[in-house]
Image 1 (tube, rainbow, N blue to C red):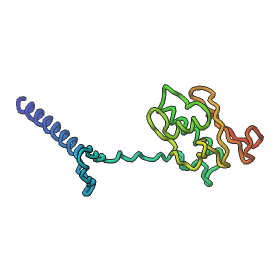
Image 2 (image 1 turned 180 degrees about the horizontal axis):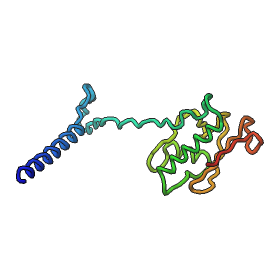
Image 3 (image 1 turned 45 degrees about the horizontal axis):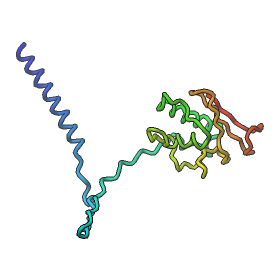
Amino acid sequence: MGLRRVLVTALALLAVAVFIWQFRRAAVTAPPSGATPAVAPSPAGSPSPKTPGPPPPALERSTLADTLNSPATDIRADLRLVADILDTFRTNFPQSGNPVGANFEITAALTGKNKLGFALIPPDHRAINREGELCDRWGTPFFFHAESATRMEIRSAGPDKKMWTADDEAFAP
């Protein structure tokens, strides 16, 4: 039994050593060649400029809204997609529930102006107008009506671009 205990201990130590080696190997990154900018000497008496650090890592661009207002889909698909984006928001902010406010405030929350800086819709998405409102395929801002913390009705004015007429489409999951 003594030999068995020694082998188990040796394997455990080997596993820990491999883990530490992998962790350190991943943490150490060599700067790319030519990445250090040349800094001109500063005039006497003035502080030398600080060398800027490496740029922050690029955030991945969300693809959730890629098909929003696409010619390959229809308004019903757009409304379901916006509802799915709102559902994803609620999943990431369970204590907050739906984003609240007017269209531009809800759109701001969905484009990253939230406590996590989490953008579900890219801020430069084609469905966002100059006023920062999320718009339907005809360029009319969606109407959001929070029915509860977890339920949001989304309404499109439809092709006539007038809210509350017969061609409106609404979706409330």
